[in-house]
Image (cartoon, rainbow, N blue to C red):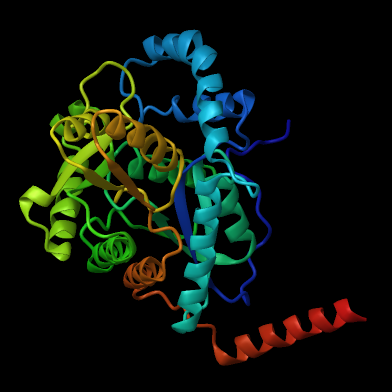
Length: 367
């Protein structure tokens, strides 16, 4: 009887292999297409995560498969279709671009580091990208979530996926994790630069609303630091912009279900501002580093309608950090700090060999 192993088979270790350092930049995820079938697959994975929905599993599975996955995919698919681009999902496009720019910026600063991106839900998965990095010789991997504020519903779920992969892997690379960077000076300055740039072209609003993704209020009571980190980001950003307390407000969006979530809620806040006589409001979403459904549709479209139909006169959505140079510079600085102590520069002889091989490949392709 053949013996089986719970671990994936691996090729023999090569002792002369040059150790490589890598960064895995992880975002939430997106459906492959703006269709009900694709959205259903995505939501089934996302909403089955116990980190996201903390209620008894059996009860939730009955609700999820009996109600939500029968009605929500078609509604959500229409919303995704409204923000989809010819190249695909905005969130995937920005996340991929950020990872490529990060690798380039690290290279300019003398670091030979491979940077890949992954999605916690959907494609490319965290496990598949870790497999790819290992196949390329990565022996050290920094896990860098795209979430500035830590939450068990998001950041910890990314770590869960890495741990699950490691539990099936025989030769695990060295791993490091970035928990949060909600108060990192570079991140705060990048946000302020983004906002100032918008104001230079369009003038300043009566009120700046900073909208963060919501989570159930119960998570705060159970010790999740997310609420506090969002408020700290908001305070630091307001201070960097030199705003008085009357000039800005924070809120939380994307409420799901009937449970009490972190307040104040974004849409009711926008309606209240419109009714109170505020003529212009600008909305920025500091917790999102890439534009996505929650920013482009929920805020830029639905939020706009809520404000304008409630008496407001002018609504501006300020795009996420996306590929802003100030943000990529901050991301590079953050990554360098967490790579400290790991050798990230290829020895000259190894680099020369690598360049020689690359030239040979190019010449071979031309012949």
